[in-house]
Length: 262
Picture 1: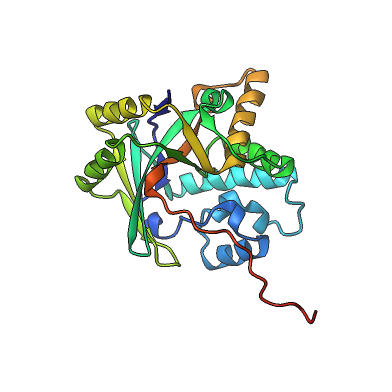
Picture 2: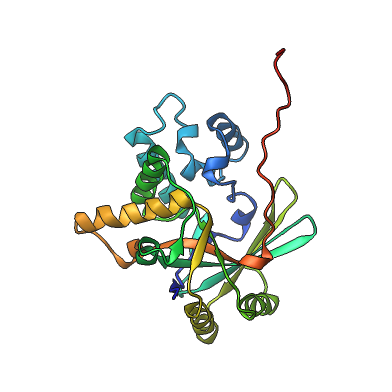
């Protein structure tokens, strides 16, 4: 059965919700990230795509990961990030195309990733895997989540929606694409216990996206264990969990727009 964990989340401060959020590190090219950073110096891309500010440096050079560590510390020192005082779960809502999707941000177990309680369907590429391994280890934080699905027996999603409906979001922003993102904190002990209990009855989780982030998290645990510097935080990684029947899967087709004279 699945084990999930609440955690003391590090999230943008009130005003920073408008400027810090960014696209994931792996959906933007280096030059595009550089342009985004030039436009918005508070973007998280300065932490997760530090190669965009070190354009003359090999993207896998040690300096890239040292810069990520420095920028992460700077964001905290500048008050762009705040850490919650209590362990909590976080309900994440995204509204796009007239539909609202509700997920749960929690930590999940590296051990359950290894024993296949958390199911995979992709192989990983070494260079991408090693890049995120070094990033996570340098920053000592999960700056991107793994997207997981769970089979809902009928009450989990309804319970999460009811909890969110009873609260005000701790932050929200609208992306350039016009999608509304909202984050709700759940830190009342009885609600935290209820969520943990509901997921303990679920047999498996399924990786929808983030195979490299998940594998890299397991790699960080293994390395820190071998070096005798493992902590409970390294035994877990951050994920966002959605009910399997509440998501929409779109085609991933490639379109040829120009035959280049052929």
